[in-house]
Length: 193
Image (cartoon, rainbow, N blue to C red; front, side, top):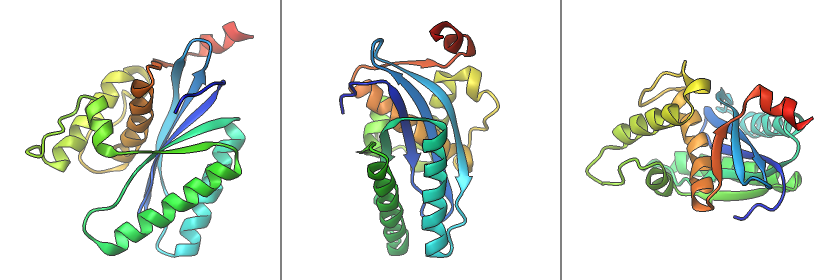
């Protein structure tokens, strides 16, 4: 998706019931550069459907208040693995996420995990286990943004795996559209004023 104005890009790894990975980048159209700002993982406490939906909605609306305008959501195009309930919850949560994007005039863009692996140069081989790909993704993301992510723990599970995926979806979009990547530096803000 071609971006034609300045704004923020939000990356999301949708949860089934618990962990939502997120990342925010600042996009500057004049330089075609996306600057990593922040990322994390939150527990949406989603055992009860209504609470899950409201927690996602409230979290995203808070991000819109902090980072204005968010112009693009890079969302994992997830289908879930095996378990019908997990697939259903992923679909519902993605629907809530897309609704919030549209309500805030942002464009939601689904990004396939295999595309992200390819763009991050993580093995796409079926011979490499899913858990090993998660480890490789986490390490690759730490290598790309070493200053901001130095304290993150690389593992095949845990909140950083969701956070790394959210960052990876933005990176994948940027690579597809030849957008440069950089870490946001505090002095960068001072030179813009």
